[in-house]
Image (cartoon, rainbow over all chains, first blue to last red; front, side, top):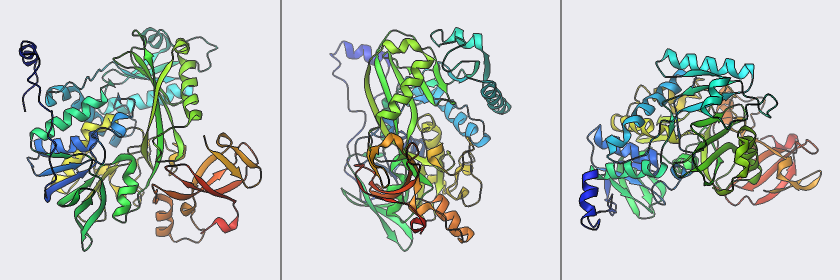
Length: 418
Length: 87
């Protein structure tokens, strides 16, 4: 793999840029791998990358039914943050956030990570108490969080409706300045290129259709490109976790729902940070191309449709317009949706299953993108050693039957009320 | 948007309805703790047809059971809910 650099670009300029090579190979599947990862999204590719880089394994395949990064990696709002109140969550996401800060250098691929600040808005006294409590919990574990006054919020985002009779009056906020956004495709492509350079086979258009069993243990997978043997198999398919796990006879504490996002035409810089309101469940940020990216609630009923519902879109946009009235002049140019695997406590699931050699990484709800590096790192550790990393130990699949759920919102086992 | 046929009110816009849970996740009153646990937390979550309990919240407020395909959104049946909906 040739290293990308400014000098290389300059050299290429003198040579008509003819030096470019494909960033990863397109190999035929081998008959056996030590580890097979099902799902070539950001998480699966990151897992393969860290398996090779950190654990020194080489005989690894990533199987992707479509094209890499074509699922939820390419269907989110690209927000990166670690501002959770519960300790297992903020420690996990903070580990990820630290990896994000060095990711472009590590991968030699510009993932365009932009730590512009991730801000939660507070709309009431109760909101401000909740935000202060969250910030305190984070700071106790050394994670940056600053409570903001109303004036500080107005200074950072002058276009917010700060009037006293606003539909959603703003009293203050909580900002994590090291949070921000990144370029979704670059994350998938950067990890793919990195993993490929270590010899990982990234096999696209290869859908897993079943598991090969020896007794109870999984010893391989049946795919649309034939049978492939494996020492260990890791499921990493986000919204389709239930579908794939069912092939191994497993039922998961997961319900798949549609989550939508949408983007306006590009305009000059007008949103400086990532604006979020958890009381409303609205996310607003501006992409590097200038489009205003909106996200809102999931479609609150089970669906694998990968297409959203206008009613939910209307809700998200109405909230956005109430917060930033100037957005009303913009035209929406694209909407999209992904299948999110809503877990029953809102936290992810990373660890072993009751089936020997079969591991699961899923249940990301609507928070998977920011977790990509941490998810890959800890899942790689789990797959390589057969044991959880300390950071993903709390997120085991058996936590539900042990009563050890990690319920950040405290809404109980109802994904549709999350 | 889906059009849902309420067994009591006839065809109505989906915006009048709220999804509650799947039929197989209703915990029987006499369930053993392990069975209650499995029923409460584990879902088939099929990429296909499942039976779901919805409520006509902004209409007659009655519960109903809907048989729906989760990729195509095709609703093949709706029926009123009662004691017979329990497994």
